[in-house]
Image 1 (cartoon, helix red, strand yellow):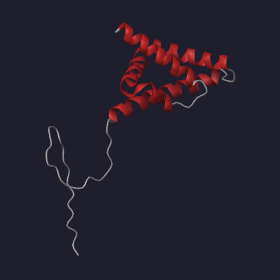
Image 2 (cartoon, rainbow, N blue to C red):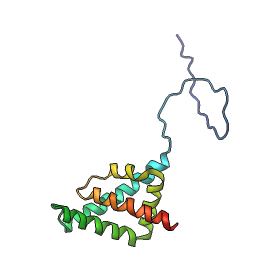
Image 3 (cartoon, helix red, strand yellow):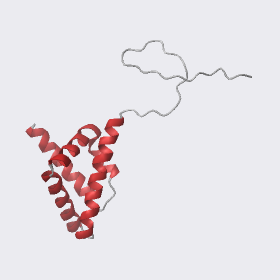
Image 4 (cartoon, helix red, strand yellow):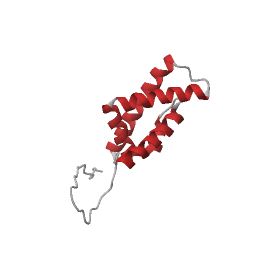
Length: 123
């Protein structure tokens, strides 16, 4: 028996009507959103890991100090600040928070959420 299946690629840059066929494969919808959030989360994660080498994170106060230092670093680095703001706009605070794995991450996320609100009020 012969294989009558056909593989082809379609690019839709406008309205599509009456498209017929099997849809198979991997689909990355909103890929830029994920990339922005993932990149910002990776940078914040790296920053938190670096700060943990200098500052302890055993107590709540120590975690808050690490978070404060991380936020200050983000605020003082205009490129990083813009990347984080873009990630917050596209992916949201929840998405960013789910990607961080650090004892101080909840404090950083709370600070970023407050920071985002204040940025939106001044814009």
